Amino acid sequence: MTSKQQLISMYAVLKIEDAAKELGMGTTALKKRCRQYGIHRWPHRQLKSLDNLIDALEKLTDDSTGDSTDASCIETAIMQLKYHRQRIAKDPCYKIPQSVFRLRQAQFKDKHRRTKEVNCV
Image 1 (cartoon, one colour):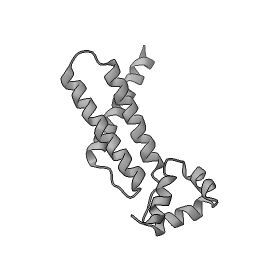
Image 2: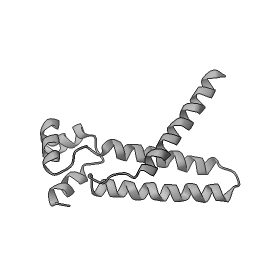
Image 3: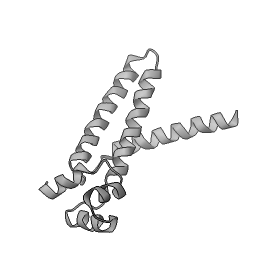
Image 4: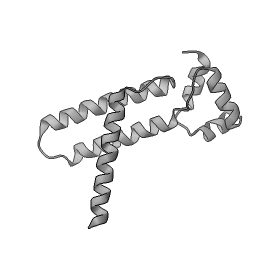
């Protein structure tokens, strides 16, 4: 990873508009620079999505009662998600594995199902 990618990765936790403002340039100029350095997408949304998924799983472990097998699986998933989050924060070009996308989709479906149940009552 080049020093320029490292500089950009310092601002990856910010929205692209905020990062551009911090760097003293417009969003279009920042996007062009990112593409020059091999960063094709701004990683903020991926980081935010992983944070939300980690929070949902941590809440699930707090709410779960009893079954230690489920709890250990959830803890393992949380550790893996935190690892992937760190990798993206360090290297914005890092590709998230397909298993994370499946876990995120399952969480979205569960959230939608619970919302639908609440609205039907």
